[in-house]
Picture 1 (cartoon, rainbow, N blue to C red):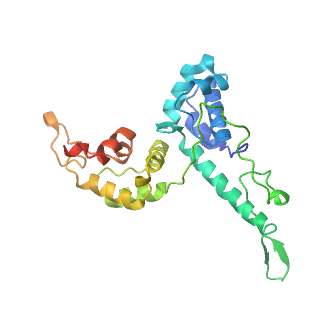
Picture 2: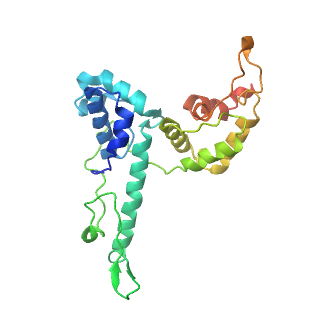
Picture 3: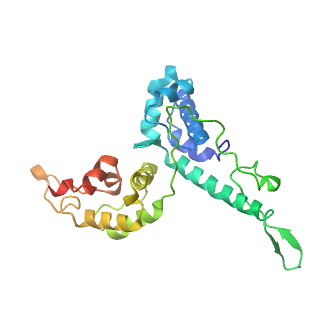
Amino acid sequence: MHYYQFHITDFAYHTSHLSLEEDAVYRRLLDFYYDREAPIPKETQPVIRRLRLVNYEAIADRILQEFFVLTDDGWHNYRADQEIIAYHAKADVARENGKKGGRPKKNNNLGESITQSVILANPDLTQTKANQEPRTINQEPFNTMQQSKIVACPIEKIIELYRSVAKRLPQPRVIPDVVKTNIAARWRQDDRFKSLDFWREFFEYCESHKFLSGQVDGRDGKPPFRANLQWVVKAANFAKIVNGDYDR
């Protein structure tokens, strides 16, 4: 996609601690992310070279560690993933309207025909272009990079399941973006995880597990360990729970 919404206030709030160079590197990585509609590849050297960041490799690494989450298919950014999903949803509306001969019309109370507006993520897709394929990728990715299809994940519903099922686990007031990114990454990780029934069973297991829910006394007089949402959706911890490592 060659256009994306940039929320100035949100970006400034989350990046106020960055230096000018760090800010610039982050923006360049985001532009690359949106252009490919895919996560930053695990092998970052080709990306560093392509974005002319060879002299800023250490900064790029810090930015990835802070604002992205490494999964099996690369470095994901939660906000970018959601914007890309929203973009395609709106582009699909434009395509469907185009097949029907343009945007649908409806009659108002005065009996006059008025055109129903369709808001698009891409302002270049006007009524006259609604029957064209949206231009989402400007160029072919280079060979070392694989396109990764982003699958919509019901993140908020999964969080609601955690709150309603895992009563013994800590209940955070605010869910950080990194937690949402990890949830989406686990959802995409395996077809088995692409089900709300799976997540309900997963949280029920954590809730009933004596160690994970803090029902085992801590060592040396320390409080018992209790896993929280952020902890259970991290890749390594999630894998151990699913594989039953804490039952051995």
